[in-house]
Length: 314
Image (tube, rainbow, N blue to C red):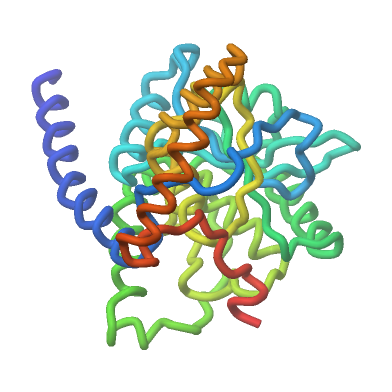
């Protein structure tokens, strides 16, 4: 039996590689994934006091205290297939005066989790927000969250395993001309499934807030992984809930491969090494000037938050 299970796992891994490489190419061709310079101030390191209702939390990494083998397998599968270190997400909702994470968790279903418990499960957490989320819309989202939590819905394990493949074909459809003409601007009928996985629940939450755009076919809730949800220009990045820049993953979609420079900068700052800090600043200015002159302008760019949902579909 162990041999059969090992063979099935190897076959699934081989099949996912066929999706992984074209998907990475697709994201780069559509200018949503790049590796380059981080221009500007370092990303903010947040505290719990910086969190607000409606913030989206993305968990990165898997500490050793995650002992459930199936949960660890799902995280590795989603991370490998989506080519992203982000494996989970949830939304902050205020319940009885306390901020709680509204999420879909394997083994527990759709639940409210304390922020401290959510953070403890990951190496660090990336925080995003939607600028179009106002108080009235947040009230609608909160009512939706309370309704679903009261129904004791289960986690969609099977759908979560295959969402990277569905996501790839969904993205290829929307970025392939002229095939995309049949779906661009069309609405996707609202569904009420009996099970959710994490990113599906987040998109269903924001559709319930009535923010313009989330009803479109492009944001069909069951075809998005947490990684692409953070990497696409849907939400606006706020900062990291992390102990230091040293824990930031090298492939984090926000800093796009520049974390090694942030780590060296932080080490120099903590050691008050002014010579290293001055050298770091001078080298950064030199690299920026060189790339601006010698390379096309599109290759030197700051991480863009893109258009908001309201401006995209208003």
